Length: 267
Length: 218
Image (tube, each protein chain N blue to C red):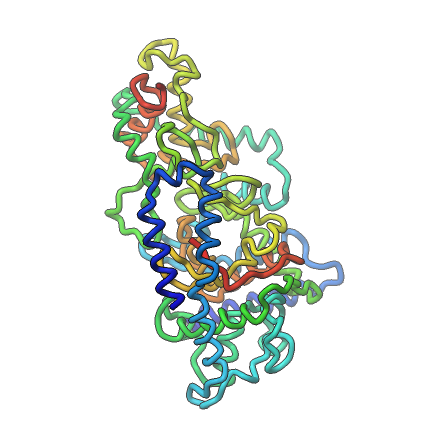
């Protein structure tokens, strides 16, 4: 069982203790740890759940999501993830994977998008959104990010996202750039990607959704951004709010040409 | 929720109008749109208020704009911001610049407090090791800020109470209390100025850096 193997590896690593950490470079150790986990990424379980949810008839309209348009036409899901966020004419909005899924859940299945957006991460329909996003990301695994910048609103959202990335505030004066604006820095032992430019294959935007080993949770990009803002001591960004999507456009466009490894596994 | 969704939609509509211009939206339009999007997107949660972002001070506003433009502040503006922040530094009311380095080490280790999952009773940490090397025994340190190992020793501080040490002691207090007093757009939080640490806690951090007995200066 993959899950058991993963858990025993975690137990082994915590027994190894801090002395072993000190021997190799911190980065080396963390990389080895991640490699050991690679052949047992519990994200598999969320992928399977997401695929089943896509096909399952649900909601007041008793319909599946199989006709959901993720930007490449109704029902086309392969390769959609690496082109999001993008502009959608039917909603007249730029949307990311998760906010677009809410639109499809409402229009196709009759579920209440606003209610789902209000639901805290890890509860109720939010778990389904995460599982769907995980499966859809997996359907674009190893493809290169290629966000559109052809629609005027997509360009506007890139510019807004850039301003948000550099916006300082809160008790600590932090911005995204405080930690992700330079090369080769780290917080404690955690390496920080420079997200003001293309950070490379499978780094930053190209690594989410991801399974978090430290807390045993599957996180989509919305939750990743939400927790960054929490640690920045910022107020709470609404799920699927324009700020989170504009930031996604900035990060996604910067990652153009980089390979998506999502769903990834993280410490 | 309905309300905020409506706002979001009207913001998007505004973007469509702005983007309709042949030349594209100006920087001023984009700044205004960003401010509208921030207002519609962020909400109070727990102890963190949306106002802490929306109504951030002139220092943060000027530095954010400079960072986004990729151009540092011009000298005059930077000097004005530094002067404003220096003026706001509160010097120790009891004249005690140095507290207990052992307490300072605990504060330097802690990254807790002031997030929306903390409550008002969570003691705030100084977050120092997140970005700085300090005591050499702690191998888990960040590199966004410079190493502070041997901070006092390197600056020749043998007796922090001496007249000779006064300038560096005062500078260090000012830097910890309000980092922007010396570098307008420093990445470092303003620990005293923003109420992250108390006067007594800043004194403990000072001791960690400057007390000749502190492990930092061995």
